[in-house]
Image (tube, rainbow, N blue to C red):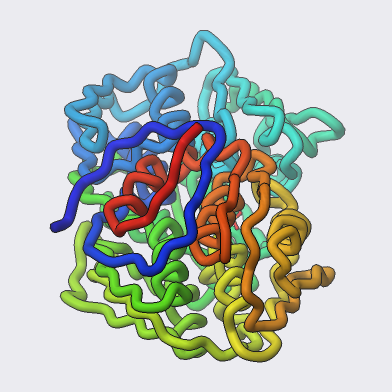
Length: 443
Ligand code: S3P
């Protein structure tokens, strides 16, 4: 089998409980890698090619910014892009709209801080509520002329021209790939060394790709440093692997719905992202990796998942950062695991697209789940048979997909409201589930 997926998505979904899910599918491209490939190719002189690009709304926002910054883009297909760059950006003639994409606004804050032109970054109402002091303040320490609304804490963000930034040693108090990447990108335009020490290993796609493009980057344990290159970055030909954060929804579905057996082809298994596989395996899930290989500097595998009874665990703190986006769907798995599952040290969930501690608890409780919010995570008792309910995405793509998977497991139909946001990261999600035998109506 193995079908590439195209997408369209309605605002409301009705999910019929599934007896099993079964089959083999490709997962759309990794969101983090797609963003980075576009941005870094924009800085590399010459022609770069990206295949397996994620054509979700978040990455399409980055694509639009790249065009506004003067890079020539040819969209060969929905998932293949060729960029032609002079090796630098041009001043945009309008504001830059990052829509719902946190990665777009935070990484571009760093990239644009080192430019000799004026720019303004903004986004949706959701993005304008998310914290930006975490990038604005360290960039100001590097000498950037960057300011934001509410005393430099929120978007819109305005950046004025600067001759050059100064390299600075940064000590992050949260493990965040968005902050780390923002500062590394600013470091490409700084005098001297920019170093970033992080409390834990946040995803390292920026480091891998910049290194492959010839940037002077040094990677040590929990500390990465960079210098301004004395030549243009080399152009790239990237094949983006499937997004493990998207695969996670199907992995959990197959793990909790009896008789399920699926294979997810060509999924990224970068060790800074594989916490969901490790945590589920510790719970007793049947997950096997096949054909492990490396593609464009990233480890990739086909993931086979079969239904297996789950047992509760206390999720290891070291795994939390490696699965920060997967914690809502792990909570669904935990509702079916025997015993008490504890997820802690995950306070970052409060500043994602929604406060994912509150929204996960609120929505899963509507189905009868025994889940409590804590200051930095959840406590879940299982197993609990979930009942169909009317759930809301709160405008958060991962909450919408969590609700759909819980609905597939539930005893009667579930309605998911405001589900169109799924396209932010997983266009073709419902088509993919239908290929695996699920019944989902769009109305
Ligand atoms: C991302 C990093 C993560 C993640 C987000 C994508 C990235 O955020 O939640 O979906 O592409 O760098 P933080 O690094 O802020 O935790």
